[in-house]
Image (cartoon, rainbow, N blue to C red; front, side, top):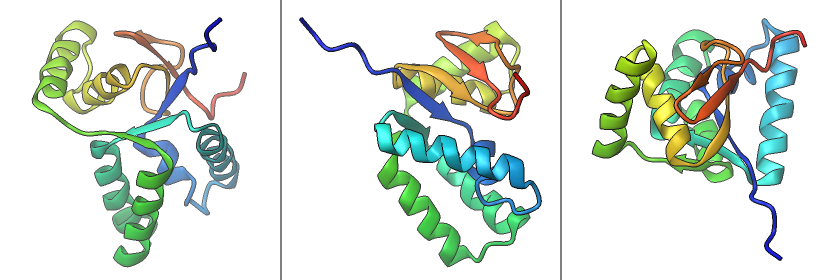
Length: 144
């Protein structure tokens, strides 16, 4: 008898950024809870795109110093499975962009989640409950 397949979850940039946002304590706490659970369960996934966007947003919008933000990026890279951007991922994102009427960058998030066999994408930016390609988007901050 084989073990049940572990369901991976993909984190969009906004969830990682909210974990550092002291102006939105309820979102910060929820984001931290999800991140801690994913790291503990070893089922969290991000992409190179998410790492880069998180660094830029932490330094430009949240005001974290570059060296401290780099430390956070290193922690995320160590705690999550990281999907690297490849030509096949870019081509899948282009296909999803056309099929789902998403921006290229959102399509790249979905393509990376698919590549890592994720079931769910945690994102505030995409439509909660919407199925894109092979994944469902869930807004972790939505009232349920």
